[in-house]
Length: 292
Image 1: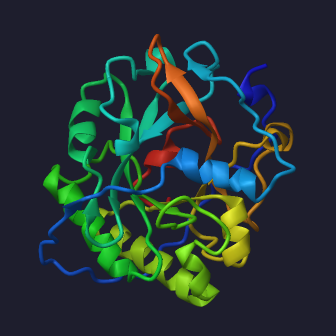
Image 2: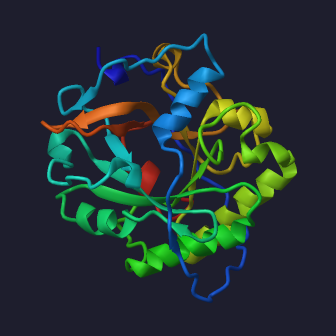
């Protein structure tokens, strides 16, 4: 059965409130190649480790275009995917958008970001966006500066590019285990400030309203369910229960997209990618550059 045939009805994304801008230094940031970070598959597996009663919804590969219906689907990539073959990444194959990892913390750039950003543009009809992995304890303005610098290096976000995304979840040095998440040492207020400083800084620099990518398991254990509720959420949840009932809730947040598996393939390729489905029928949810 198609994924969208089992997804419960979702509220449309409503108008978002603008946040006051936080100034980011205009001084150039020297970026270093990122290495040794956890992949989304690593973090997804940890989600199941701490929720042993959950089972995966997609046990075999979700194959584009075979398993994609008329909903809006996309993928996300980082250097953990290696060198990506962008030729099959097209709406014809069911892939309508991609989010590409740009930066992490206040000085690390994904070593494949510039190549992925440049080459993804060659895939006809594919919409692209860039995301940042938020590091615990590092000021949000500094992390925003790194993200903005990486975008400047590739020519900044264009009008047709998707909204900026900040990935907020387990931040572990190596394989995640209880007590290894660096966020555990920070209060809810401290975490909220780092997130909101990044969001407001990037909004000010790009003119686009950011989206928060997160896992409900992480969010609900570190933050109040309704923290930062004016920012839409891209939720990651791979459990079978989420197929039947929808991803677990985070307060009254509005969902823009749902990452339902880290095991998808495109065309005849064997490389695995995270797969996402848009909650709604329009790319406007991911691409609008204003709060209207």
